[in-house]
Length: 426
Image (tube, rainbow, N blue to C red; front, top):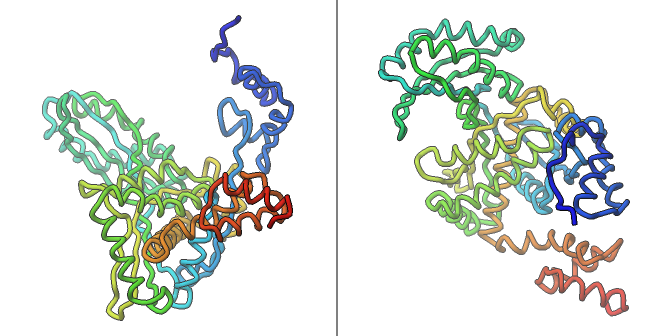
């Protein structure tokens, strides 16, 4: 019997249809329905899929829902969110509704600056090398800005220079940070190009050797901030408020809790980032690195009691999103989502995303402090379980409702309830 091999010469040169045939044959599958599934690329044309990813064979469609009730900086928003988790959109809607009448969310942004790092090694005199680089700030500015005249014309470009000495097991490294205003672009390509262009100059100035020349996803010069006050009577009273504060303090002090606490924030953040065609991995990496900036991993949000006894929440986190380049411009659904929100700048989008993240955290903390996270989550998840059990049409709602009544949302229970329903027992 011939041994299967994943070494397929010229696979990238095949058409999408031919790649699907090869993949199905490799897996021993000859199901024409499977091929039809892969060929259905939804609202993204197959030729565009082939341009966006290497060795394309199809798309993975993610549900897009719209969060309502969001009042941000005095403006009403409907915010598209792409996620497979059923409770996420509902959580944002509920949190936003409970603060709408008290003014909604207030947001701000520290700027649109990104960092590129240039790593210099084998430097005999790192202190002297550091100063040699800093002395050439204006020369560095000219080199960087020459890389992207369009960015400079739009008001962006080189802004500042930092040089750090980092002690490593193999010896000290001199790390240069290029601080660049990338405006409405996420900025990876722009800052990476500048770092590449600058590298040989740094070598000639210092006598060291440059290795890495790459942006940092810890975009702490590009912080999005959101704050909001929830009135005591809107959230259920002092007991609920105090329970939410205790839940927050747990995340503030314990990294095991903080990981789940921040994951909840990212449920909302990542859903909007994905819906707008931005880089979810970059945002996730930056958020979690920022959460550990003090030397331990902690909460991205802060919760307090106001002088009037109400509940105040705030969120501050890196938000390197853009409107230029990549899927943001190429994916028709991403463009449509930006239009629904009437987004005019990367800064505006960042601020909306921060508000969504804070709303998500509010709902999670309130659920934990009151009914527990499972009840609300599972009442929504029950529909998914009913679908998995094979329910169709109005059976889905009836089986889901029955699971909630029983207080047990499991596939075996759903299958049993569906059988009863079809046998005329429900």
